[in-house]
Image (cartoon, rainbow, N blue to C red; front, side):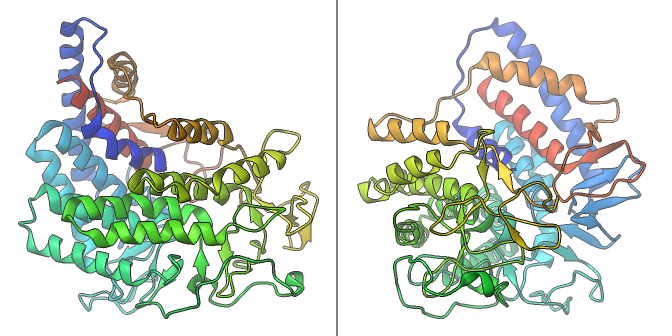
Length: 472
């Protein structure tokens, strides 16, 4: 999903590099525009529920899935749900200036306005039924659930990013959208701890805690097990740092506000503090207020994490791009060297490495710690491909003062556009096929073999917008 959001952010920055006949590009551009209009019309007219979206739909639109089956009154905030689709509409509007796409984006904001919590952010889903299973303590008084704004899986980050971009597209002249974006931004800034960390969840401004460097726990962490309300602690799990970065950058740019820039610098300061000492100079998923790696869910032990450590490195480089301060690059060489030493025999990284011993750490199906990955729970990514080569290259470019972003050529963008156009059916749909692999939310499709995907729609619309912007 991050690749989709990054593409959306880059639409206006695409530089055309002409290498084909202008007539061919012009013809393809017109075809792309027609496809963008048709697919948007289908999604807004037939798929949306009060402007909102879930992850997947049966082709007859009678069955809807978010993380599990969605009721007829529920839409999803967590990407690739409602705000991710809204950002794709904005990418199309930015590339074309056509009112249809701005209207689609504005309609997509309506469920987010309805479902904004009193704490300022959003939960994973919105339920229009006050008695529904996913109802929340909404600002509008039409819900009676919990008041937990979440940064898990880029939920509040993406909702706020979308509303701020939409506020900008309307030139700040839509009071309801502007007020919701400002309220959400204020709440997000107040959810940052003095050391720069963010919790996974908040219900109000966070309490002050001492600013300390990371350290190994001096107690037997294996006997501690899951911590109650771990979501209140310092969190890096599921790329929280990397997901919040574009939201803070956008807030600073859109509103010419120095506070989000300061918040991002503070986040970088936290990552410096949170880097573990030798012999494991990387990061954990979660830290307690004493800055010890700690338990979260029952399958997330205190450990060094291969995945989130890479996100920490990416975030430090983003903070360096913002500030030019070399201190944000200093933790990176030791972290990269350490992570290289952690590669498994199959070239992957384990999600967890045991504190001090550095042995890859897993869980059995009944959630007991083990060093054996032969029989692990299938709902979690215990081993993953890494991006160390890419991170090392980006770090070297930064050291040399060279740009880390290279615009795609018009030839490459055109090839993408042609493929996407071929896959659009006569109803204006991109129909996805069940492949048997793991998909976001892990829906149980049953006998369904074909379905509609909000993620595929957003990605395809954004790629077409990228081509259209580059071919003007």
